[in-house]
Image (cartoon, rainbow, N blue to C red):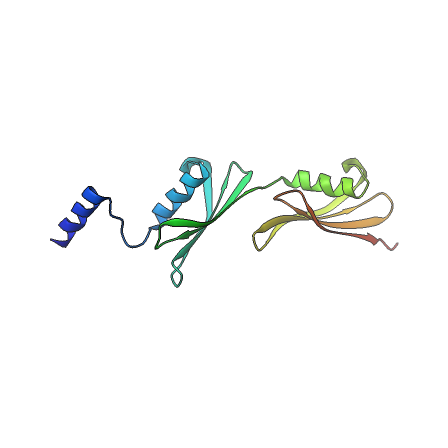
Length: 155
């Protein structure tokens, strides 16, 4: 009898269950981001059962990163953050030009992508033609130089 009443509630009144499911939360954020399931890769879907909030992250087209918080009780998005992730090559060029070189004039030692809080960034190290080593942190979200350091190489 209880199942029948629940079914009637869904059909007649569009009633929702008490909490949004993981699949329903995914559909909610996909609709909000105007993406379809085939064009994205979900990298995180976690439910905080104390707060009943889903933390959902996904990427699309290798260029965009989305981060959402979904209230599982209210069936609504709390935070949506869509971020353009620029390429490693772009970040290297930004750092090198800022140091006064062209890409052909430097030796890139390392590039790593990392994340602090909600910001993705690149750590870039390279040697310039005048015996200096440079270390940069470049935001992958907006190309902003977060930090830079110029060090003398001792021979």
